[in-house]
Picture 1 (cartoon, rainbow, N blue to C red):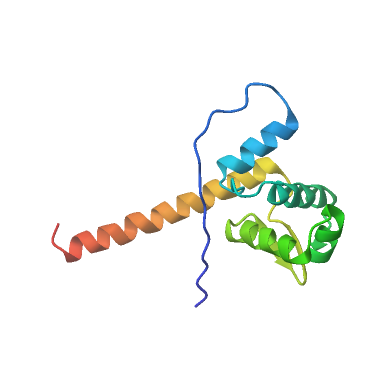
Picture 2: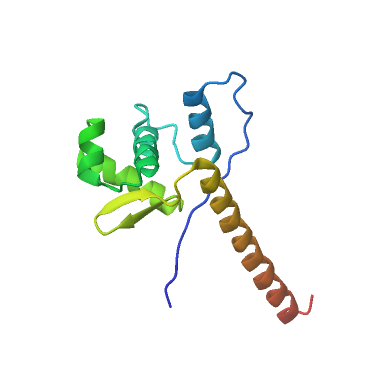
Length: 135
């Protein structure tokens, strides 16, 4: 049996007031808990954008390609790719990476399904524990 660990963080915050694609993308990533305050040069955001561009072209990217395009070390690129993979929004095909789906709206729907499945599992286990404890 394969055990999948996925960390999904949802942060409720006010939507951007002004319509600006860059600000909206930052808000979306922040709301999904993808970017940390420690990332001063927004390298994770830039990796996310690079993968979004690649998704539009349906062309997976290697960590070396991402690092080269963004002028990052390969280690930094891999660190951010792994973070995005742990959140469940990036998958790997061979030695290349891409967003799990090709649009942001589909991505949000997939995260929503992941959360629903997790809450269903939580409710099932909680009910079983309640029964065993006679609650």
